[in-house]
Amino acid sequence: MPETARTTPRRRPAARAPLRIATWNINSVRLRLPLLRDLVAALEPDVLCLQETKCPDEAFPHEGVAALGFAHRLVRGMKGYNGVAILSKRPILLREDDPDWCGKGDCRHLGAALDAPGGPIELHNFYVPAGGDIPDRAQNPKFAHKLDFVAEGTAWSAARPARRAILVGDLNIAPLEHDVWSHRQLLDVVSHTPVETEALTRWQQAGGWHDALRHFVPPTEKLYTWWSYRARDWRATDRGRRLDHIWVSPDLAGGLRRHAVLKDARDWPQASDHVPVMVELAA
Image (cartoon, rainbow, N blue to C red; front, side):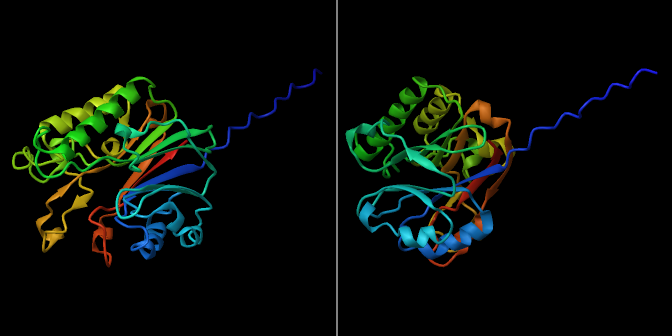
């Protein structure tokens, strides 16, 4: 009687551990360092990108951040304003050749290679200029700087289409109709003017970036990440804007699993006017 052929069952490849990327305009890392513990407890990010750290590199609170589990840190800061940081539980390596945006050296971008199970991920953390109050290039140099910055970002993305890449940060533009509390009333307000929203859309399209937050929340639904300090009761009026963004390259979009907008952070003591946002993806 012939021996029955035996086959060895194929092993399924192990599922990749999800990667959680969060971004937050912290509006002073030293002032709000205690709030990072609450953020970590709520979102458990593997990587946290901060904007407006307002802290020169030599004064960055590395010890306090390391105590939260972020063994790997990149910082680029200056005294009093701007500043960006990438805090990671996974190894990261600084990208050395990224642009000096608008030739100002004003600490608005950090690029890094992030260790991930599927291979390194190119990670970019941006703080785009706010642009002042007058939406006119000729009258307002701050607005001109903002438009020039976004134009440089667009050309940069067009020259190097995104692959295994993530771009996050406070981009200071709410591009879609339902990214603001009133599209009609904010059309002439900096952050939602047509010239800005069209410029940001061109940047996104130039690199083929996928809007990770709108992946989960349809464009027909309201989505905010910022509420002004001027509002007496920000939650009751809910006059928000979506200024904080996470974009992923098309090859990572299929791995998106979930998102979070930590709205309750707006009620924390000494809160930032921005709240943390996070996406989880298989990477």
